Each structure stands twice: as C-alpha cells, then as structure tokens.
Length: 180
Image 1 (tube, rainbow, N blue to C red):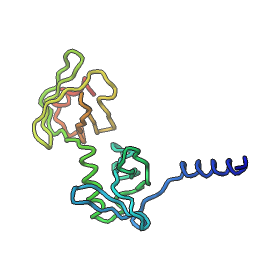
Image 2: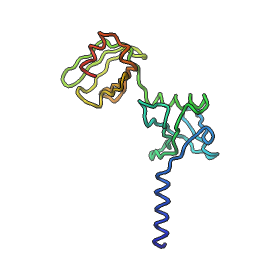
Image 3: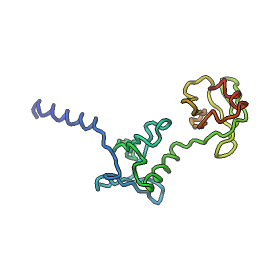
Image 4: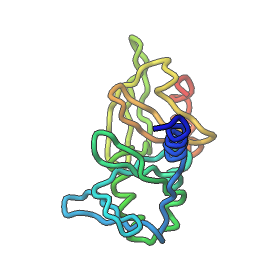
C-alpha cells in the first residue's frame, strides 16, 4: 500500500471517530425486551441491546443522551439530542432505564446532619422513605450544587437530591449551612 493510500485510510478513520451519529425519531426505533432491556433498530439495521447514558445528568437530563453498545466496549452508536422529540412510548422506555441507572431519591425533609471523624452523617426523609447515610466531609465531590438544586453523594457513591433548597424550612437550612 502506498503512503498516500495509508494517509487517506487514516483520515477516514479519524473522520469516523469525530463524527456524531444523531439518533432521531425518523431513524431510530427503541423497544423494550421482556427482560426490561432496550434494543435499537437504526436505519432498518438491528443494533441489539443498548445502554443509554446521560452526558449532562444533572443539568440537562433529557438532552444529549449517549446510546452505546451493551457489551464491554460500550461503543457509542449515536446521540439523542432531545429525548422529548421522540414519541411517548420511547420516552417512557428510555426514562425507565435512566431511572434505574441514575437512581436518586429526593430528599424531602432533613432530620439531622452531623459531622464526626471526617464523615457527615445524614438522617433524612426521601420520596422512598426515611433514610440514613454517610458522606465524606470536606470532599468537593460529595456535594454538587447549582442555584437551588443540591446533589449529595454518599460514601457508597449513591446520590440524593434536594430539588429546591429554598423549599426547606429555616431550621432545615440551618442544619445544611455548614455542608453546602
């Protein structure tokens, strides 16, 4: 193979790597298997089981979803720019998988927050019931905050969400002040 041919092959490979395959309701059909997995039919070609991953899970949960092969390579098949552009059934199927992947109970009430020996101990009421968990103290990765929303990551990497801190009582806010 000549040097020119090798260079052209390398250029094609780089272009393939840099290209983004947009998945739309016109070219992609998602379905759910009996076992609850998602399969994809893309431009009439069966892609088999796929995983859907949020690229911006906290700031844009319905936008720029990466659809990847479900094998060990997890190669990207394409990007869903806006999930809400799909039909209701597809949105429901994908949201079901995303809820399992990104299970995140919502904190509705804060009973107590205590710091001791480098850990923060939380006692809260979530939309899934009363819960106690521990998070590392002083770790910038354990609390993610936007203007009014807070995500707390516990020691086991589970996430808990306070959707709007302004809706907490003044007493609850006082308990959180040192940790947010």
